[in-house]
Image 1 (cartoon, rainbow, N blue to C red):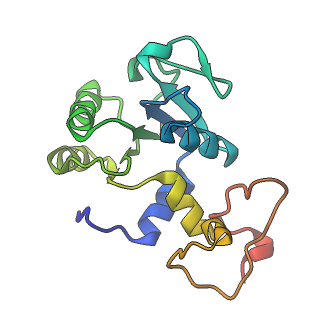
Image 2 (image 1 turned 90 degrees about the horizontal axis):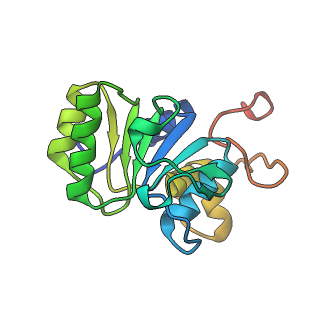
Image 3 (image 1 turned 60 degrees about the vertical axis):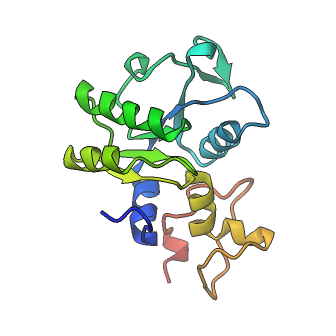
Amino acid sequence: MNHDTYSDTYIKGILDEVKTVAMIGASANNVRPSYFVLKYLLSKGYEVWPINPGQTGKEILGQTVYASLDDLPDVPDMIDIFRNSDAAGKIVDEVIASGKLPKVIWMQLTVRHDAAAKRAEEAGIKMVMDRCPKIEYGRLSGEIGWAGVNSRTLSSKRPALKTGFQHRGLTKSPANSD
């Protein structure tokens, strides 16, 4: 797969399919990007399992922090990697070797490891690199456009708003199917 660009259909399919996310490199520091992404994904209804060996047993945003993928209660649908590219490659190899395969491995902005992505895809894992699920969700749901950001998505329809954050705004609802 070409990882220089992803179709909206591919990203939307992943964000609709995923229910559980293991976030490697989650931070308890509320000014770190991983904290914002964790908070956002929780607000959209995802179950997020923070992984940070230095915070093991503590909580981030009410979620128990785990030391490693091996400590999680189940195999996550998606692993979101907030580490550098070299570390991400090693994480991918460890995941493949474990046999506990997620549906998706997502590498955050600036994180890319093409050889590891190829190995993951050969093992049947979907890959996304150098993207943020928070940004992609907001862009595809139309939510990011509310702040005046060009989402590259044109529509004459208003987004269906619900109370609080727009919840699971990517999935068409029966009332918004036309």
